[in-house]
Image (cartoon, rainbow over all chains, first blue to last red; front, side, top):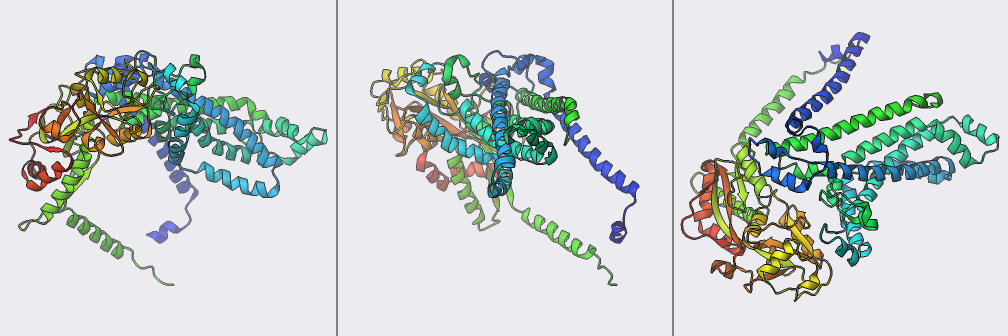
Length: 327
Length: 286
């Protein structure tokens, strides 16, 4: 029987088998979305979309939900997740911003300006960095960065000025953004480096022949040509940053608090809790139905945001097709 | 051209071995437990001793395996009500919001101390001071006489699933609630580490974690926080550890709980850091 399977397959059989595998993946994703949506339905039916807004202390709402019974009344589903959503937007937004700037600069250096040995070493090193498990970054953050910030950057005056509202312990916005940037920059750099190298040499050399210096030639010709790849790398990095749960639950402060930019520089040290970190924290307490549907609603929001991100990346790349060198 | 040997025979042999292997291993009874982080050190010792005792029985030695995880008292109670574990460890008495149908078997007494960093060795705090610190009304060490610190008070607390938090709020805070300014930690160990590494920190810990040289246990209203004062009743911050089952305990779980409540070896283990219960200890219905 095995001998018969090892003979070359006909095109039809190969087509059907590969198509079935692809469909299986699509069906699996669809089932996952349906599963999460069905578990999240009670929150939507009791709260509608107002659970995305703000109102009250999210931590105490979640704490109250933990002690509800197996058949909770409608009031048990009260949930206002805006502090969590705002924290996710803050950390992801700043991390992607800084990460993109650093990745672009690093890629341009590696491809155009690095001497031969440096170029040969940097490329595999960047790929290795992209493969580091994210928990390691969380450990480095909580064991090294947090005590450093607590002892050196936070003054006693800072602590006492917010003392009646929140505690400053070193965890917070600054550490979260730094660690997230560290995590997503290598993969963006690797993708943009590959794309830069695939720009035909003739294009760039034509610009140099017209009198541009190498940097300007790279910026005006190569970077423009790889804009679809930059958009793709940004979308990938954003999706990774949004879903980063373990690291952020370690270093973000663990309190559903909205950092206030009116506090000046102290906003960098104020604790916050992104959506994924909240799900990780509550992952073992999901026996209360009210809490379970709220956490599944947060998970559905994360799924939905990834979907919107992919769609946005696709739409943004449509007008770039004129200059495309790679898809 | 050599004919390929059939792969069926070796595969069948391996599968038979695997099935018999699992069948033989099935004679070991596994008891799943989860719950309080405060009672975890005690449960670790008790399960280890019980496993040894059961294996050494002359007639019908039993192989028992305990898999104990933590998570907090409320997590253990919810897990056992949902059927995910056989026994839940609880560091608080049943509440009205707990699932119905549970039996709480008391096994030992413990106490909760207010703790500070060794760089801030406060010897005593009055009930008013404890309430104003933990409820967030007083935020600066300079307002607490006897303190060597002058900055902001870093209040360390536990997450809402902790039984020790409930005990602390009911006994030492006289029913008040810890302020939301406090940093909630998920386990006793994490809170202990937080207080030990921050000179301006104050928190509350169960006795196993509070009574050691690396942390300062504060007396409450003039009464030192130790075993003797809890036994004679002068220290108010005490409660019981419970083993929680869904319905009355049966089988190996009943044997284990009964052993803890009656055996001399179990009593000796409890006396190392906790307080054994005296008299009859009927289960409390949840």
